Each structure stands twice: as C-alpha cells, then as structure tokens.
Length: 116
Image (cartoon, rainbow, N blue to C red; front, side):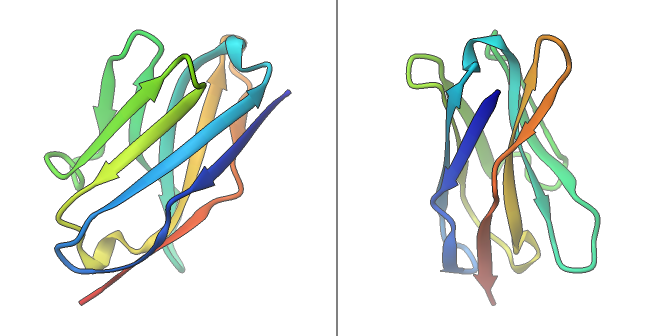
C-alpha cells in the first residue's frame, strides 16, 4: 500500500504563487510515476502535471509555463510550484501515484483558491 499526504494549499490572489507538496509512505519504491490532478466544483477531475521516475514531465496546456512539477526520490515526495495563479486554477488538488503494476493511489486533496 501507498499513502500520500498533500500540503501547501490555501488562498492566494490572482498572480500569486503556491507550492504544493505530497509525501509518500508505504510501498513507495514500487511507484513508476507521480502527478497532480485537480477538480473544480461541478467539473471532472483533470490532469495538471505528471512526472516519471526518470524525471520526464507532462503538463496540461492550461498550466504550461506557469506550473513546475518536481520529484524528490530520496524523500519520496512530489512538488508542484504554481506561479501566476488565475481564478480558474481554483480547485481541490490531488496527488497521484501510479505503481509499476498500474495501481493508482490518491491523496486526500488540498484546496487551492485564487481570488480575483
């Protein structure tokens, strides 16, 4: 089993920055990829950014150039640095981990609210 705990959400004005953290525990050595998803009220959960163990990354078009995902293998943690935040970035952000056997694990979510 893998446990994921997110932190770093909060309220910020448009144009501001936040850094989300997700620390994993348990059978984290079986993880092939980690990432961040978000879900706004009334909308489906969507991909924000992914990072593989190799370090390769993938971003949603809506956050390219503003968000940066990074991985600390030693600390079993993934981070999301969010810059130039917009009100449309408001959502609950979820950390995700995908194992080498394609089992998906989710954190409890952290709220990000961007005021205009």
